[in-house]
Image 1 (cartoon, rainbow, N blue to C red):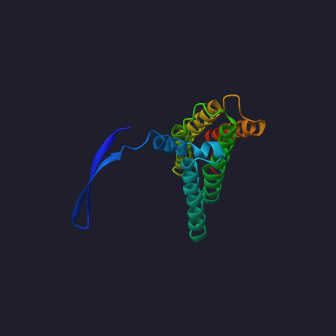
Image 2 (cartoon, rainbow, N blue to C red):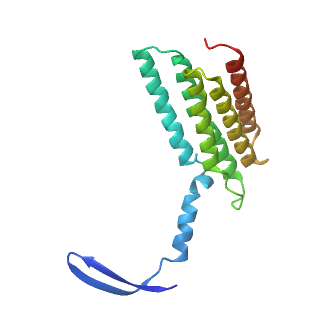
Image 3 (cartoon, rainbow, N blue to C red):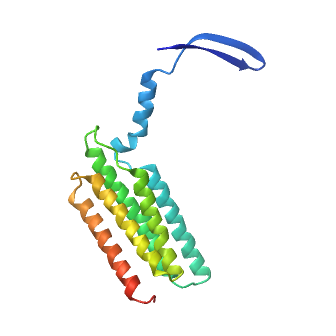
Length: 188
């Protein structure tokens, strides 16, 4: 371990402390372990929790806005933001956390950032398409949601339980059905 000198300025006095040890390797390892603590504990990663919380808030805001001044597709928007933006994201992240908690500690970490970016981009694109009556955004959003589901599926890599896999299959089927309805059925 290396030594370093530190000059401290405290209330106008200057004090030099010599032979202050560098940060020990153990401290660095503890920080790395802390960064992965969500994984071992089986907790939802904070990125998913934060995004899901924002979608829950957006659903509440949409519900209040619709109550004050009804707008086209208002009920659908509230349901979509709650079910897809909040609930589905929490369920996917929780399922992934459970799989990772049971995985060997040397297993690769899933691409959390990519999964969250894909899922939330899809959550934005679909209602955008519905609200501006541009079905191409619905289709693109659905493709992005399916890509996110594929990323979750790959991260599970044979370690997932039946319920988690069934959840992903159900969500994929829902995205395909929703896309078909958006393409062939005029908005109600």
